[in-house]
Image (tube, rainbow, N blue to C red; front, top):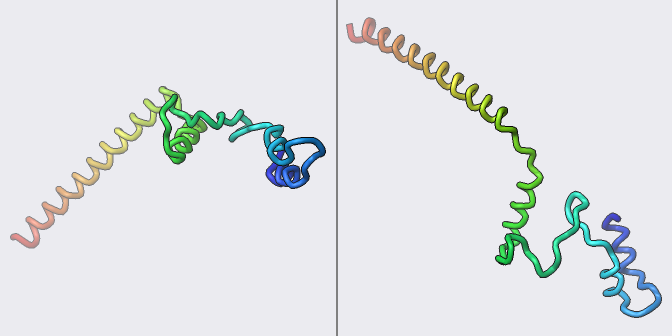
Amino acid sequence: MNRAVRRQQLKEPKGGKGGRAAMRAALPRTGPAGRAAPRAGRRGLGSIAAPRFVTDIISELRKVVWPSREDTLHLAVVVCIVTIIFGAVLGLIDIGFGWLVDNTILR
């Protein structure tokens, strides 16, 4: 049920007792991704009361699709190889400029 429908239902009290409070209690409580929302008494992290932004961070981190161990290992190896190559290239450029300065300016 989307937000506009909920607002409309809350504005129109049904016959019977309770009115708006009864209507709010009758609505299903769902959170992000259709999961049941946490109860009002619980704020996450066990029984520790955490600030809202902390619970939001934890909720977003649960949605992350983390890479597998093999993917992580493969990417780490690629980063190491690329770092070694760039280090070698920059070292050769440094040696070349050093030779150039020694043979032209300091001669």
